[in-house]
Length: 325
Image (cartoon, rainbow, N blue to C red; front, side):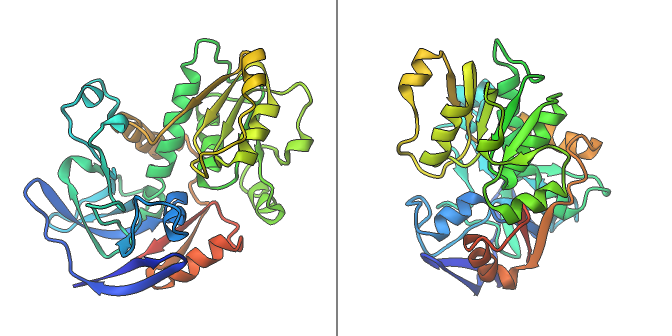
């Protein structure tokens, strides 16, 4: 048996004793040391994601040790087939048969133990803590998005860039943009308390949309994904610019299609990361290219339900909360 934080109904999480997983052939048992709370976990917690029905163990941003060898690893939570055209081309995030832990049939990582395919485990060095290693998954989302932005034909990361949202993905995109050479990045965060907290973590401007330059940004990265943030992104993007859409807040409204058309604004979505993106992210973290990685708040798994409630109420200032099973 083991302890796990179980989503039981909208707005309800419960610490329970459940069966410890028995890994099938090709998988390893991971003792989870650190696991982050993601925005998608919040969507499930709120009952807004039909892909995550209760009761379910959520959580997919995990790091820990392989029980049989004590090897230190971070987890790639995307389990793919490896043989479809997307996988063969390296775009594993688009595998039509992909599974992610925290969605049936795979339980998540808000638990003491987790079963994962051996190929999904990435070794981490001793000088990278488990809390830092748990940031690899969300930072890989950011790395993937920025890599795609940098590969656009007219990409100019020296031009004014705006990131919308001061959560882990927004703050991570700021770090990834800087790692890719961006020099003029502003981050929009409307929660004044969180904005003040973020100013203590970076020298980049943390502001509201009304405080940004009138001539617009060459690149706007929407890390929230609600109608209001899409509307802001459309208004802030200069003619010929680009909107990169990462957030999964909702799927309705906000796009000014007429302005996108008349001003030849490029809009594209980005999902998760490839296997290579995650490897590259861990390497960049190890090299210090993504900063000190000291911006997460930590709590025991037993306080997980309270952590979800605090995030929902806006009482958490840190971009990320990491739970310790």
